[in-house]
Every structure is written in C-alpha cells, then in structure tokens.
Length: 136
Image 1 (tube, one colour):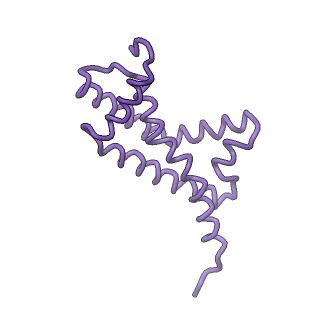
Image 2 (spheres, one colour):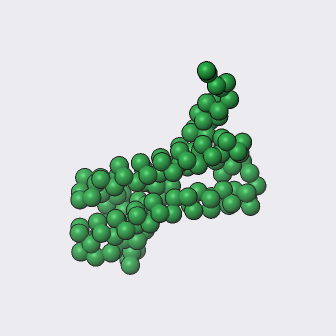
Image 3 (cartoon, rainbow, N blue to C red):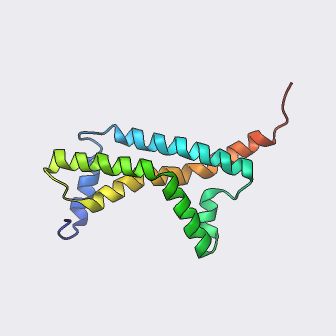
C-alpha cells in the first residue's frame, strides 16, 4: 500500500492535512484526549499512583509495557476515530486509502501523545486540590 517510504512526501502530506478538508479533527481528537487524560489523571491522584509519564519512562520493561497498554486502551476510541477520519480524508484527497503509515502517525500524534503529555500534569494538579483542607 505505501509502495516505498518517501520521507519528503510523508511530511508534505502530514502538513497538508492541517489545511485541507476535515481540519476539525486537529481540535476534536486532542480535546477528546484531554478529557480522557482528565478522568485518568484525577483517578491516578485519588489512588496515589505514580504519574503516568513517569511510569512510562522509569519503570522496568514489563511495567512500562503495562503502562503503555493502559494508555492505548484508554485512547482506543479516539485512535479509531482518528484512523476513520484519516481514511475518509485520504479517499477525499487521494482517491483511495494509499498511505496507512500516515494514518497511524496522525492518529497517534493527535490522540495518544496529548493524552500521554497531559495525564501526569492533571494528576499533579488534582493531588494539590485533594490535599487542601475543605473550607466551610
């Protein structure tokens, strides 16, 4: 399907997606990732778990893999939505589904990366609010 990998075309196609049809997904998918990270980050704060990104970086391999799977599972619907939207985009722009690698990169960049980067800070902010004494 990809018929040989051309890095120049790859980047040109990725940048063209920001200005072509269906650009709303560049807002929709990160927003959905933010909402998912919000729920998971607050849950991490309540349970006292180590922040998500820290678990991805500093644990041994089995724990890192488990954390990665947890993040992918949490963002599966967003990733699938991203793949579906990119398939539609490719049919509109290229006349068929020609670049599956680009589809995967776009889905991961718009859904998983924001989730991964936001879950830890949300956890830390939530911990601060959870530690404050309640005001009467």
